[in-house]
Length: 195
Image 1 (cartoon, rainbow, N blue to C red):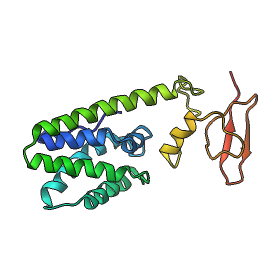
Image 2 (image 1 turned 120 degrees about the horizontal axis):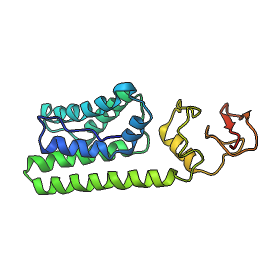
Image 3 (image 1 turned 30 degrees about the horizontal axis):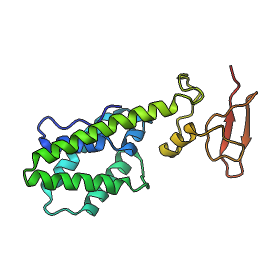
Image 4 (image 1 turned 120 degrees about the vertical axis):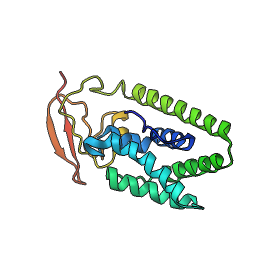
């Protein structure tokens, strides 16, 4: 998925917000899994404008207020709740960058943007490399379920070896025949027939 784009009228701060949101794995997982619906990318682009406007309209914001804004935007626009601590990390990055912009430290802000862009590329390469050995990685069929409640858990499932009958991962596992088993916690493990 593409990273959020800074608004056409935006300056260096908008560019830094776009880079920060673009390198945020939780938002990228939400986009890649369609949590924002058909207009997910437009919502991500709008988030840049909303965050920038929030800073410009409110004096003396603290990190917690920015964290609450980001959590609310993710919940409202992508039906996503992030509990890995990354909302605060992203809020702190944006808050710090805004302070740097206000002090006129453009070189520092541009350096941060460059690091974020590099991190986004390396994370994407690692994610692609990490899934290349997974069963069905090159097999883009419609059999895969996309009704996962937690995108991060779905990614963890793909990188794990075959889940057993008691697994919490509703991912496909290796097996000689196609069968369904009900796990004790009401997850269904689906096994696919090898081709």
